[in-house]
Structure formats: C-alpha cells, structure tokens
Image: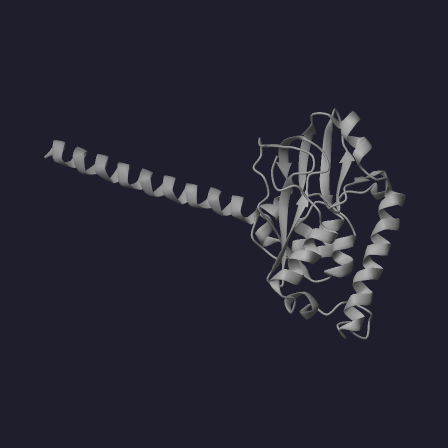
Length: 224
C-alpha cells in the first residue's frame, strides 16, 4: 500500500513538473515573440541611422556608412522612396556570415508586383541584419531609407570606396534620373495631383519595358 501511494505521488510529481516546464517554456516563447518587430509598427521595428551626408553611394542606389573597426552599415538611398513612395518588402537578404562582393546583388526590393535588385556597395561579410528586414512584412519605403538593412565587415574598403559616389554626387545624379522618370510618367498620364507617380505606371509596364527600366536605373552584377 505504501509503495502504491509512493508510486502515485511520484507520477503526480512528474506530471506537475512537466506541466510547469511546459507553461514556463510557453511564457518564455511568448516574451520572445513580443520583442519581435512583428509586434511593432514597421517604422518602429526599423533601426534608424543618421549621418546621411557621410554615406557613400553605389550606382544601384545602395549606400554604405562607416561604423567602427571596418564595420559598415548598408542601405538604399532616397531614389527609391521618391519614385516608389508606397510600402515595399525587402527580400533575399543575405544570411549572416555570408560573403558578398562589391557590385553583386545584395537584396531584392518588391513593390506592386515588381522586383528590383540592388548591388552591394562594398565587399565583405554580413554580420547583422536590421530586425524588421528579417520578416516578410510591408515597410514604408521612406522609413527604410532612413535605416540600414545589413551591417558588413568590410574586406577592402579603402580601395573599393573609390568606386562610390559621395552624398553631393549621388543627389545630383538621382535628381536627373528622377526627372527623367517623372517626365516619362507624365507623358503617360501617370502623375497624380501631388506630382507623385501613380503605382500603376510600373504595374502596367510590359515585362520587356520593366526589364529595360531596371537595367537602366538599377544596374547590378548578377554573379561573378
């Protein structure tokens, strides 16, 4: 009888312990989830970074900004939110630890059923990713511009920086490119009353027209 009671008590103890462990694990997982950017508005999920004028720019409209000890933030410039002012999704972001060469595709930007690819402004190893860009959620394009997408450990910055533009040069070139796009959109009656491009301007392009647009305004090397 005593043995039977002991066995029953032991079983009850094991069951209670398992239940408590399960509840504790659930609480921990819930707290981790609450800290995820998915629980924040997109603009709060993004980690912003200043010093815009210190950035160096690639022709594919990506930029790089020095951090510390050969570590650099990488993002995209104002050209994207000025012509694609709606929400975008950052896709195909390289994994942490992967090595990317300058000029090779570093990520895709998707909007209104269209995709553009951008180049890495420098060569190096990806050491961090902006939390909001790890999740498949729409992000305000202008908020992403104020933030970084990946952080890299540069491998040859002193030489590769000679292939990039400074802030003033980038503004000048982007202004000319934007004017050309606005003029084309205006001819097709795709400018709204606020002077912004109607999203249908891009969605109504044929695949051939879109391909030419991307090749002209977002040049990048697919592989090396």
